[in-house]
Figure 1 (cartoon, rainbow over the protein chains, first blue to last red):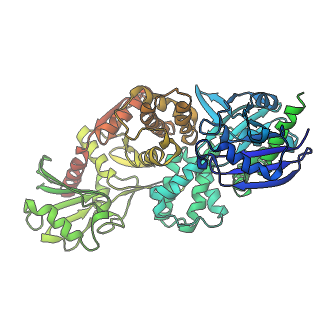
Figure 2: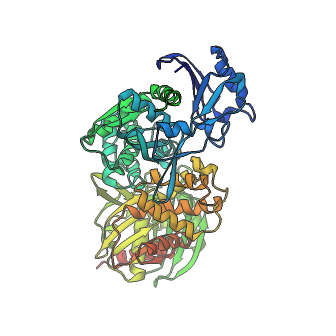
Figure 3: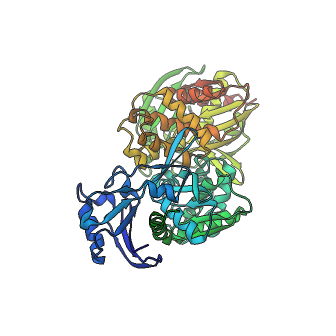
Length: 301
Length: 301
């Protein structure tokens, strides 16, 4: 195993890292050049500019995960069907021909699942799950990646068996900024009010549907039963509580939360209130995932 | 019982009608002067202009329902607690002192319910339910009023025992216009695609939460399994199906749908696919409800 240049190339940002053979991140660079900000035909130039600081030798391995492999990205890396393990993902890497500097650039595929005859997709989160599995030394588990579109993935024997997407973060933003509730909520979210947040989690589970539960943010304010300042925390509890309501939560098994600490902390709080223990893996999971895939590529078992 | 001047005074429009002693609507007038479009202090003048065409005699009865009785309206008509029957509503009418022309103007109160320690409210729909009960000759039933904020009300012995609000119409508009789904949907909704609509209803029930189900509108389009033109109907089925999913639907009993025909027809279609019969009452329920309340006022039983 040699050094790796890893890229986390999403919709709105590009992150690049130089990773040592032992997995240590040696250097890291961020830019706003997400795929929506890259002009047609400019992917090779943006890539070259992002990695040239490390003067990689021709043939050096670069792996990129995220939306760069989508239909709107540099080149489509078709989805890998579930169940998929590390070797399946590596086997479906799409190699970019004639990458700048003679580099060996591979795009990690996203994952595709199906439930009730309807497809579901992820792109980027599979790499974070790979990283978390290796970092935490796990073979099985329920992995939750909160965000604009949260992912819940079931892993068994280091294979992602299936997953579901929840538009939780996006629906929070829509309700918070564009719905009738926006008239009552303060302009800024402020720090988390834990009691209001947990009240929201609890009400979401009783109400049975967010379509009903969300209206309570209005009526509680109308009757002075919740301060306006606590409403963003309450609404956050409602949407996260709705996500948890519809899931069969494991008993006696930890859930693994992957993502930004401020968000995973909320899920950890909500899960704890339901008696479900959770541990967290941070953003480092992406770099470790790309490094783990590179290791799998170079030392297939 | 004498003639009645009835007003349906909502957030964005004002409708007024002259109703004969036998309940016949003799004349009707619409204007965009909903309460949000009435300047501070201008309620008396707007009211006078709306009714002067009928030259009502001093002391003539006028009843107004809707948001005009909210805190943002002319004068607050406090919510009436559930369970409430016709006489309870009439007993809580808020009379406007010194109404223009010496008219006897009453504001119909809204209704308040509570479930799981959280209040719920309606204002205007209670009048429609009263009207539908009288029009259809019913004493009991499950009444559904679809809309921006749908209401599900349980009636027994002509008393509204309780109800729940669902932000169905508003969430449809948010997802359709402001979410990531908006990128895939065509600019206009077009006519209803019944097959796509019912597919949405079915998937919402299987998915267990709209947060998850909504993402299917994206993936079905991504994999070419649903034409872009059918997506608005599918999304409409998802949100209406979500509303139905979380309800204990009656068996062997008709649901009564009250509202605009284009919308109640969708609910009727969705309910029929679940084996639940439904009948509809149109917009006339509002006028008939105000007339029924006036009759109750003048001939208390």
